[in-house]
Amino acid sequence: MQSLQTIKQKLLTFAVLQPEIYQSDLISNTRTYKDLNRIPGVGYFPCPDLDGDGSVLGAETSCGNPRDVNDTTTGFVLGYLPVGFTTRHVFFGAQAPKQYYYVVDERFVNGNNVYNNGATGRYAPLNTDLTPASAPDSGSPPALPNNTVPWINLDGQDGYVVLIIDPGAPQQFLDGFVQDRTQAGDAIARIGDYLDRRFDGQSNLLDHNADLNRYFFSQSKGAIGVNDIVVGITFKEWQAAMLKRLCQQKPQFDLIDSDVNQLAFWLNDYNAVSNPAGGQWRAILNSQCGP
Image 1 (cartoon, rainbow, N blue to C red):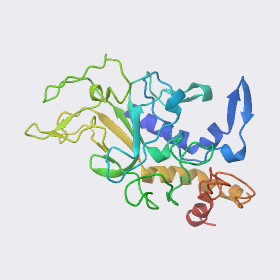
Image 2 (image 1 turned 90 degrees about the vertical axis):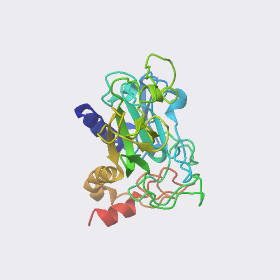
Image 3 (image 1 turned 60 degrees about the vertical axis):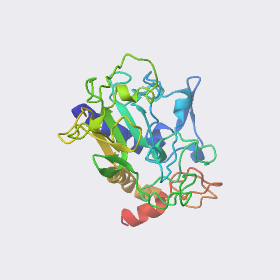
Image 4 (image 1 turned 45 degrees about the vertical axis):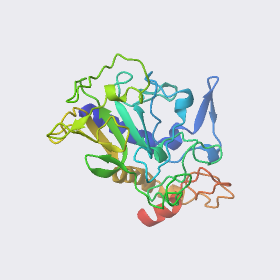
């Protein structure tokens, strides 16, 4: 549990420091600063490690699963927790690949080419109001309404942005399924060998951690068969962490040009053409940080 709490804080720090971590690119051992319009705003988390090598490389660097209000397997991405990004000296607390599973709301990942936001490769605007909403989420209506809270569910409670899961020891379940972590395969194909099944008192299979839907369960007396230990980051915790940083900087932010046609910058209002990286933060800071 202590390790999971440490990872939680490291992930929040990563999200809070997105503009600093990604203000430059390392090209041929030369640090090249990005244009303002390509620097991400605060709040994004890493994509999962799918192949279990500990890193997020190649196709893994973009992940997305747009939410369909009628499909409980959408709205989040899942895989192994990456050990870290060695090129940026960022590490999340896992001692080895495949040690932990990791679930994150797909709007909050720092690489998501599903959304059409120019060359930014991520959902925007991302802010504490989750407003204005951005297509292409599906269902009815076709885009999620403004202020749609994340729907990852842990132990019956919606509103989680991130889950970090220690899968515990392999086990055999009441229906005879035996976990075998020696088999090859990516995180989704092998999820049943890591995350657990859940049963009621009559040995009937219930919603569980390995069924790829949005409902997850932590070890408890009421979750028969589950030895997974889960720590989450709620949307409220994410909001508090982002505002703690941004409100402290509000005096400096107030000096920055607010015209998105003059300054394409993550602090300013989102515009699909002139400021696709905009986070719509300025009005939020004015309303929530005081004078």
